[in-house]
Length: 564
Image 1: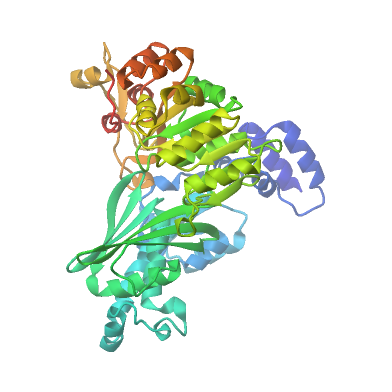
Image 2 (image 1 turned 180 degrees about the vertical axis):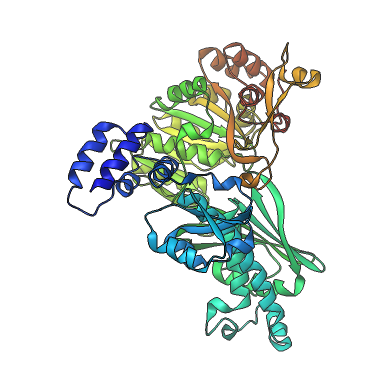
């Protein structure tokens, strides 16, 4: 195909793919209907954005980052969700009398023809990526679904509403027939979809006296997405409970459940927690994307000098590596990245988790079950008889688990676990306070990684500013420096931030620090020696992020620990 030769020339022009990769493929596709762009994407030899740039030039169209364009719901609704899924074409806005249409595949002549057939006036076609088109579609259509579900509920008869209020007595016929059209089902589905569209990690559904509030946690911050009448809550609560396997008749005690569901062809794991409050049960839903979770260390925010220290820790054949920090600081994510690196055919890796958040091929993962007396301690005692090389314990919660973990490390196993302390040196004191003898701690602990999460500035809208005197003092600067502040744009939902990264404090236990531990030295003594030997504090690593323009000064201020 002549098309493939022309496309190949453009990929080379933009230095997106090596000639040695392109030529064999062009040769192979001669006489076939295979297209080069599709194959390059399928084999991950070119990024979505790079491919879009090439296709835009090939068709003499404009390439655009449509995440920077504020979508107009009226324009988006000129097409259906099914149309967007089939053709990956979406009308997003009107500018200067023109309908702005984004497409990921300009070879889709049928989709373009259909857009022209029902659009009124002029059309300007932009080439963008499938991911960004899908993001806009998911966001707009999910909001509409929520509004429609609320409207449909108001149209339900008084008799049916009374039935819905009696949580625990809701009969199946209220969801029967066309279950997808039931108001409670539509509302629950739309809340889930909207949360995913916003990249939320958690969904909060909170009942109050007269209304229900839905909030999403995005990049660590909560914001209100919608609010609706309290009369909808019994039906919504019952639906969530049924889906997650929670007892719908029980309203007095906290309960936990789990939902596995495919949304937009992606498998999601929803962890559901209910908590009784004055006005009813509060629901928090943790969203886990089982297909897109990234375990790679480079993506977690480790600095080059920190990577060297982590490499040194992971090379140890035995000992304990601890991850520490408050709840929600990304400890489990970092643990998974370490386990992924250690995963090899010649290693027997067993984990004990509560719960197992993500499955890793080749790793034996055990789910804690207190009802069956399968605790961290009991599971750990059992897996030591399973001839492991590497053991991961989700959390060291008590003295018993700590004692077994220490013994496992001393007897030739590499143990990875988490602990709740504010900083790395504080973990030493915490273990000793739990009843572990200092000489055991000194002998067993290889290294400790303290972690926090800070928000990344949105690259599309961050604003450069010169540091003030107060900011220079906070950053320990002697002269003004250009840093960046959050602004807000459509790409980041006007928050100014997009994504998060870890900031770390890594304490490597060498002989000198071992001596201090054995002498029961204070946390401050251990800290001073560690800093003298090159340990970067949480403040130091976050400061680097501020000076390099990755995060903001306000995120630095949120770090609990401040440098001495």
